[in-house]
Length: 475
Image (tube, rainbow, N blue to C red):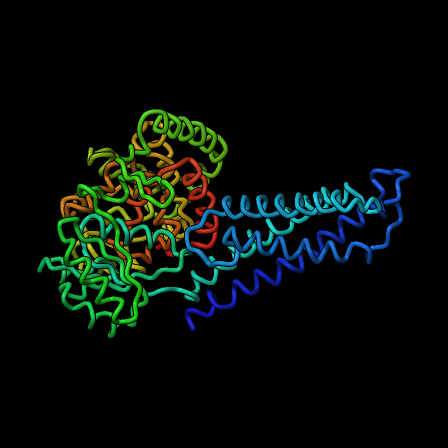
């Protein structure tokens, strides 16, 4: 069932390409002969469409073969859309030039030359749109569980966790991490959120069989070369594909820059993305957006402040120490959503905690006020954090600012999320919010820190809008 997508999607793509190539040529014919954008007195005028059918058939065959060479009919994960569009342009250019040469060679002067330009432009447009739609469909199918591979990770070190958080952060790639194996007694028995610890590495055949694994990803250090070879053989004997993540000089893959030299991988250290000009750019965007938001939302602030005052006694704002970049404490501002004695009641409610790890969350928190339930559900309580953004203590996008008591309970690998400025929204907030486990949140935060770009910030901010409107995972 899970491989159905990979079985029928290439055929669907092929059939759609054939149809769209013919539609594109029909549109080109209409532009040339019905609209007559370029009138002329040559013999190409008023040529019936039937005359072009042999050329259309040849064009279709050449284009399909060219697209196949570009990999258009392979369902490949993580293949950038821009590369697919480039492949369409490259294949179309090749096919059109071959036809033009053929027409000139046989001197069939009744064929219009301009029609090939129209056809090429329309083919690029239609096939490009088809690639966009196909990628969107594949992404939705994979997020719904169709065409998803069940993955087993071997090695729970930094490289293994890097692979796990990349797969969690990109569900549209179609991988679901089921669990991991490790020879370290502690790691092999400690789950990473929903990712199950399945024991020692020698349990590989049993783990593959019992968990219906489709792929094995090996992330062991380079000195385990012989063991890696044996694990690959064991995986293949179990009918499962094994992939190996290179761990050159103990570099995590988040810190490696990989280039391809005619099939030879060239690995070097990659500079951290949030430094220098990138950091300056992010700060400039934060300041501009925060200043604009404070100005536009001032009336809403007044309404919320009045509602809080009328609903329950106490201050409008809630202030609390939080951990900033590198764990440096700062005071975070929020609209008060709980009664004044909320902190005193915390210990009484501790046994009702629904969150794993150091965080405290319960869905029906009795400490919330009536107004508090609404502003928490809609995330309006977070708006005063714009003050923290203006002061440089927070960013629009970044990891959630953690309580100091939570940071004190962090494992060593959790602390990597503190390397960037905390944010009002972040990758984990738009990937499930409070429905995620603590380890999943941390892995998504670290993924963000390792893969920051202005485009990623914009994407997260856009994805935050529906999350806020529908209140998914917020409580």
